[in-house]
Image (cartoon, rainbow, N blue to C red; front, side, top):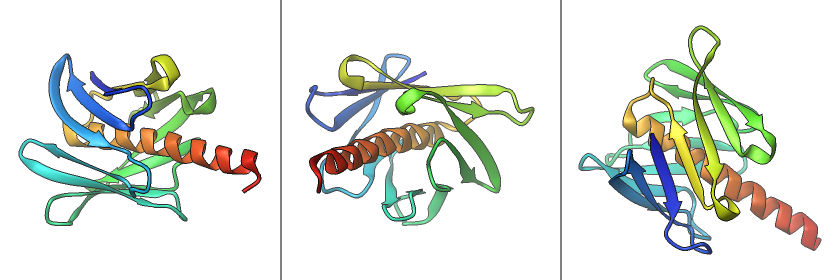
Length: 156
């Protein structure tokens, strides 16, 4: 199981571990479009298309490894010609369930911790880099939704 935990409560810097073993770090800092992380000696970038709500995972050469359609309550991640569906199963995007080929739940991504400062991903049917991508997408989506709410509440 993957666990992403903020380094500090107010920061957007996360440390990612797998079963307690450190894997990588990534940042969702303000003004940044997406995130970057290194895994297995390869640098990856998660690129956000703000207007369309689409996310892409790019390798160090800029080649697309995976992508999502518009991330909302129901969305899909496409990788190697395979579509992996996710659906929101808890209010405010606190949990997304991955659906397997049989239509049954096959994994989850959950935001947990004080102030939702942590997230976990249990997606056993996916390669590690795709698990990280899905987890980062949920965190980016949550951050984008929070920014949109704050702008609409402030009248701006």
